[in-house]
Amino acid sequence: MSRGKTLFAIAAGAAVVGLMIAERKRPLRQQTQPDITRNLRNFAMGASCAVIVSAIEEPLCQRIAAKNLSERRGFAQWMPKPLRVLAGVAAMDYGFYLWHVATHKVPFLWRFHRVHHIDRDMDMSTAVRFHFIDMLVSLPWRLVQVRLSGVSPKSMRLWRNFFNASILFHHSNLRLPDGMDETLSLVLTTPKMHGIHHSKRVEEMDSNWTSGLSFWDRLHGTFRSSPPPEAIDIGVDDIHADMDVVFTRSLVAPFEDQPERR
Image (cartoon, rainbow, N blue to C red; front, side, top):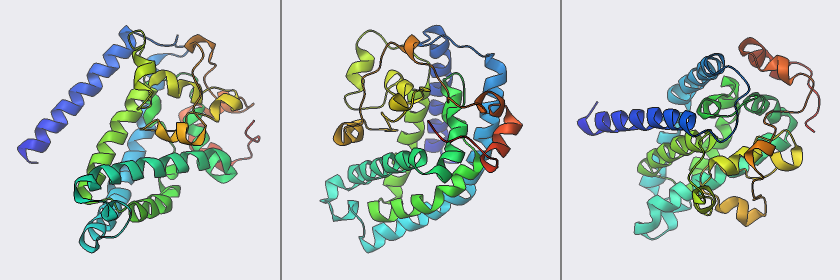
């Protein structure tokens, strides 16, 4: 590993630890479940997803991105040169917004995405709580997303770093200073903004889909101002949710009969 990559990894690790401490010092919502059990369960699920992403998704995406650059193909490559990196990141972010909507609206996709939403509390560990097969199911769309966006290898790495930082931040249980959350939400997805998306109420869940830039929710009319955090009941409103939240049940639940999303 190069010196630059080593320093970046150290800085990223320090930022994650700092955010983890901050969300416990300034909690946005009162937690209802034991932290250690939840965190171990969620991080175990996240580790299985990381294996899929690093071993399969990332190499395939980088291969397509390299061809985008060499053949000047896709949306970002049609932009003036100074705008190509940012255009690639924005296009990838928008593609993820569309995919996120699909994971709620298409019953087959919801079976796997539901595993993320049945967490009864919400903090940084929720950001990585996904079923590992969710990574495989999303792979065809991710490859199309990379191809159509025209993202380059550099933009691809930048988007992935931005995406990872964003999901950890907006899933965190961090109460920002007065007014800062609302101001940041004009551009970025924030803890209060994303908290409403994790509400048990479908009319609240079906809003604030963005995972990075908040523009897409505003563009599509799906942005919703958050009620007070304590007014949001986190989780999924179905009869199996409390049982399926445990690790082993989370792995098998998508393959069993489930109540319709409501």
